[in-house]
Image (cartoon, rainbow, N blue to C red; front, side, top):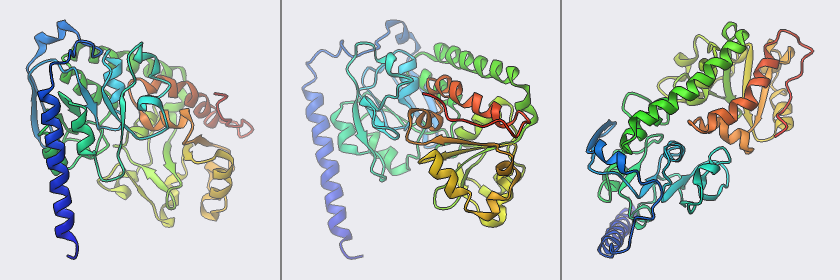
Length: 352
């Protein structure tokens, strides 16, 4: 293939440069790392720990102090457990340190993490190496085997669990995996129980959810619907909603997929949550689709629209131990209005 040797040369050079940078930084390790946020001496007794994942298992020998998150939402469990990463990966929103408003108070007085940008080709190896990590987290990720192998040259890497699709790990499992990696497995389980208790209480307060069907979608290249293994869909099922019966059969072994016009029927649920660029324009565009506009979910006003670039929209997609309470405070009133059985009830946007 023309140019392949030049690209290969550049890749080798980049990796060599990254390794040199990492080695040099490590050699200059006389600087005091005791100022790194979140050191907990009681956690040291938990080590070493070994965590299984998609590419085998990783052993973490001692309490990590310089954590880099390449998983797109992994910073939230780290912060919830009282540590501040030295590096995070930007996914949604232009937040300082890639930390959303639902998690900002967890920074305390610590310096915001360095933000790494994934341009679509995976973690930027040389940027990760420059941060001198002693742990790299890629739990909510689509890390490839080659990327895992390369990153493992710099620090222990915890990749996504093998029992779920890429980007399909439940927030509960994500929090517990990261808790174990940080030597705080018990605290992580307590955090999960706390949020689960809040969700269960919300479901109990809204018994109509358990009698309703729901689905999450976005008008990406047509109509993209999230499947049962996507964290966004699990928001609905955790609240009691039932997903469309044939959803996973249509989507296949993915977190979501575009559906054909012939399967527009999947959208005719008691409530549909649309993640759109603009709530008013998004609704108008969708309603131009005659097949969709003719569904009862539309004619009876049971649509929920979420602006994807808003803090609320970002929290809906984050689905983390920290973003969930923030998101539910806004989503639940919309869902309640959608399924209250009164077509006169308007589903309105949150005020904040």
